[in-house]
Image 1: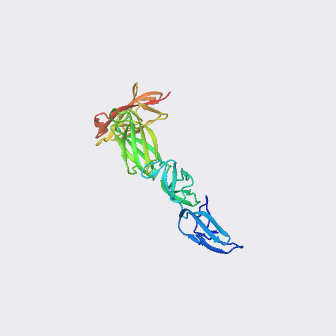
Image 2: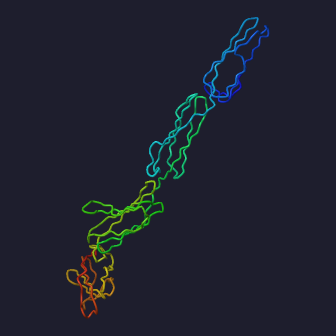
Length: 335
């Protein structure tokens, strides 16, 4: 008779006590060998027990094999691939579990558990393994998971004299900002012109060519290596800022230029084949109208290509004291 919990494959998974019952109703039992009660409190490999009884009517032998494994298997875990960046995973992975068992042995392959979210800096993947005795052990694999990229918005450029002021808004999880420009520096197709781990929101790019078209990309990355970006087109300008060279306008444009130190006014001349406007604003901008009068003649903003020039003026307007021309540019009124 045995007292214990039977697991699987004939293994006991709790303390086991084996009691032999020796009876012979018709004869006198003279002696027994190996029939004492035995208790297996510790794990035990397969052990054969034999009880022998002798009576005046003869002898009888009974054997039984017992095995005890009370200890669950030892479980380990491993990810199917290394973390993507800084200990973070940013796309799905599989966690595999393996086990060893010095007594009953491992029953079969342990579970493999996929993980693809949710985002969690303290995610836990649990897996189980079973030994041949039926003991079950569970292990946990901890990981950091973030598959959501940061965001960049409100990307804009503002023209300056052979420069571009780029501004943007990055989400709080941004850890790296890169600004690239195409065409790039020194003839390169594209160049990274700014890179910083700070959450900066602006950059000034210098040395642009007036009239040349540029594409800026602002890319942001988070700690897990997720990346997102936006692009914006920009036309380089000289001292004449707006409209951009050769820009098509659908309404009378605001002409704007960079200020000149000491200038008290500016002379603006507009040409369409011939000069159609000359004005002397005190500010660094001039809003064109659909019609205006020059030398007593009514002029109108008609379809075509317009060129415009600006000179700084000093002192009183009547003195006609001008500096070097700031530059010239064009805009287009579509037909």
